[in-house]
Length: 208
Ligand SMILES: [Zn+2]
Image 1 (cartoon, rainbow, N blue to C red):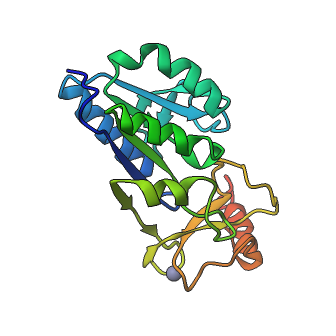
Image 2: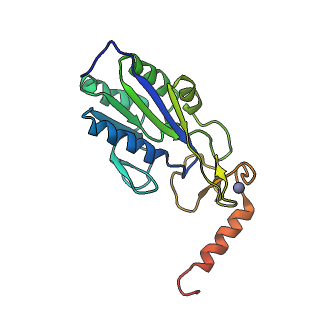
Image 3: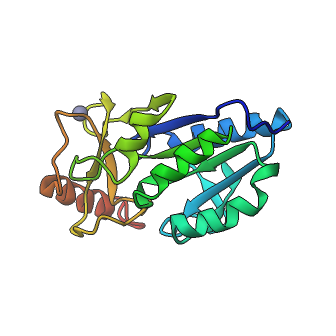
């Protein structure tokens, strides 16, 4: 089944948080498995959301994934088994450094189907890590939108609600929400933070 003669493909799945990127990645990996293709999946160990040994979507779909600390480590684990693998998935790809780009190019040249999912922009609204380059060299780019939590329009941004300016806080409930262009405030929406505190007070047990 594995051929070195046919070029592979790179499929990038991107968009803001809560747009269903992981869910779409999991769906494609499961379809490949049903087609009896051999599948592996990796994610950076920065993603502490839910499980350390699987990828998870916000809608609680999961798929086994190997957690790796770097692209170099991903390569070390992948290459010994590469002859037996047809489909390679990578989730939260925005947290890998630029070495993920030549790796993707290599895997395509070896005839592999490479699926990479990740955020296209940071909470500051800027292009995120290697994702823009991966989108540029991809065969297909699926850019998903979420739903703006202010107005309900299609959302392309991830709004930071907390105080932390760290780039790497992942999947922490209540820290982020999806926003449309109109309602996106880079870095921090003070007003939303106040609203969030108010909501958590109102929803606290014993207050209703
Ligand atoms: Zn909006």
